[in-house]
Image 1 (cartoon, helix red, strand yellow):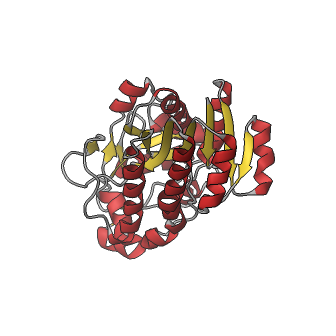
Image 2 (cartoon, one colour):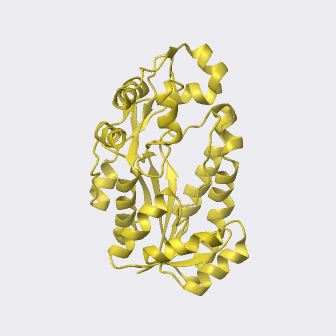
Length: 313
């Protein structure tokens, strides 16, 4: 198939494009940066330059290349201050709202068969009931105030994609990425914070996180492109884990001192309500549906294995 990848030069795009080409697909990689075209060509993709927030540029790029599948991997996530979560996610939120709408409109105009979009699962589920959530469970109706705009953007993306009746709309709720090109890799921001003991466990550390190695996420995305059906899928590993478990284990693997433990009131001063929620109250996700429906299983079934490989590398 001819697959149009928006966000082809990001951490996920760099893993996805070569896998699609190896599987025999023709890949068109969209980037907004002229200088990144050469890297796409080296991977075997056809580059197109367009700003995802400009509907005319997106329509032109998609119209010229006539893809059968569009894959939306657009984010703009940099350094994050949890006290100003929505501010730091502002551009990503626009990509998940305006960018999604632009890609859907362009896809509809050329009649794409399938539209696959990146979402997120490591904090949006409702913080009630069981610790592990499936795709049938509701998203959080009362997110931390610093995260309201970001959750609204996720809702917009998911509703727009799965509600597009003219195509097979697929949403992939990825867990927290780790591995090459992510902040949880050697030299990455979060590894550095843990190594310097700047990533404390807040309160009881009972917030459950779901992780996925970026290579496993790319493999799941190929499966969704090739055989996914309309709907939402959690793309996570087999071991959702409380912060109180995974954070000290990561520090041990890095040979770093164990993280500080601070009470919730101190955590709120340092990281705001959003930081406390992430540390104490978020829910993990089950990958059962993705395994059954996509025929996918992570090669890194646990973050324990993946973190150890990353620390050694």
